[in-house]
Image (tube, rainbow, N blue to C red; front, side, top):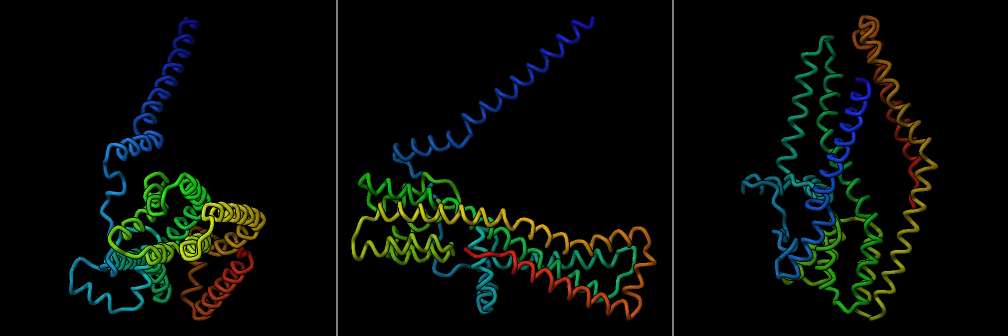
Length: 327
C-alpha cells in the first residue's frame, strides 16, 4: 500500500511539473517576446504596417480635456502646462482633467476616512492628511516618470549600438528610426516611432529629434541627438560616434550602480529615521490611545507635533541631499 501511494505521489508530481513546463513552452512560443518579434518581422516583410501603423498624435498642443471650454480654461493655467509635460514624460495616458479629478477624489476620500476615524482628530491633522492625499497622485506620477526614464536610460546603449550597426549596413537615418521603432522594446521604441511619424508628416528632422529630447529629458539622449545633428551639418562617421557614445553611457551606468550600492546604507537610514516616528505613534495609538491623545488635545502637544514635523521634514531633506550623488 505504501509503495503504491508513494509511486502515485511521485507520478503526480512529475505530471504537474510536465504540465507546467508544457504550458510555459506553449505560452512562450505563441505570446512570448521572441514570437512577437518574429510576428513583427513577418508583418513588415509582408508589407504590413507593423507597430509603426499605430495612431500617434503629432499635434503641437495637446488637449487637456475632451470638452473644448474646459480645455481652453485649463490651457490658461501655467502650472497645468508643467503637469502635462510630466504626464507625457511618465508615459501616462491620463489627461490633465482626469488627473485633477483623481487628485480631488483622493483628497475627499482622506477627509471621509479621517471624519469616521474612531479617535477624533484635530482639524490641522485632518487638513494635513487631506493635503497628503491630494499630493499622492502627483507623487505616484513622479515615481512613474523616474521609473520610465531609468528604463529608457538603460535601453540607450543598445539603441545606440543598434543604430550604428544599421548605419554601417547602409540604411539611411530615417529608415533607421523606423527599424528601431519596430525592433527595440518599449518604451524607447515608442519615442522613435513618434519621431518617425513626425518626420513623415513634414516636421524637420532636427525639430523631431528636439521634440524627442523634450519628451525624454535625459543627458545621454541629448548627447546622441547632438551627435546626429552635428553629423548632418558637418559630416563624419556617425556609426563610430554612436559606438563611442554607447560605451560612455555604459560606463556611466556602471559607475551609477556602484554609487547606488555604496549609498544603500544611507538611503535605508533615511527611510528608517523618517518612518520610525509614525510607526511608534501608530503603535501607541493602538495600545494606549488616551496617552497619545494628549499630543492633539493639549495646546502644548499640538505645538510639539508641529515642531516634530518640521524637524522630520528637515532631516529627510538633508539626508536626501547627502545620499544623492549626481554623476
